[in-house]
Length: 129
Image 1 (tube, rainbow, N blue to C red):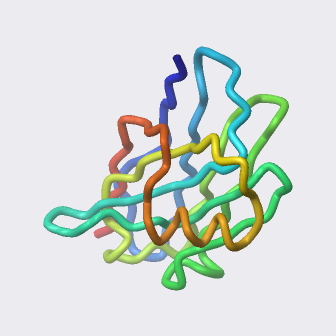
Image 2 (tube, helix red, strand yellow):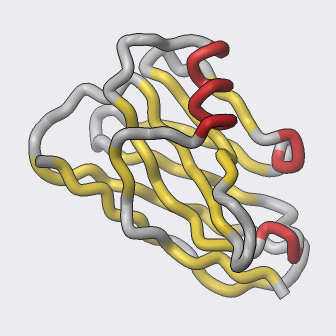
């Protein structure tokens, strides 16, 4: 059993920055792909950013050049650095992970579009206003 725990959410003004963190507790699963997914009230979930075990990354178009996903393998912590935040970034942000054997840009793009990660955190709220 593994538990994903997010932290770092909060309220910021437009143009501000936040860094989300996600720590995995429990069984030492080797997740090949990890990511961040968000859901705003009344909207469907959307994949924001993903990273695989080789360090390849993919992003939602609307966050490219503003958000950076990274993985500290030694500490087993996933990060999402969010800069130049906009009101439309307001949402609950979830850490997600998958044991898929597939890595690379195509696998990451599929996970972001289908949002079908196998493991999920409880979420952390980000509000930009």
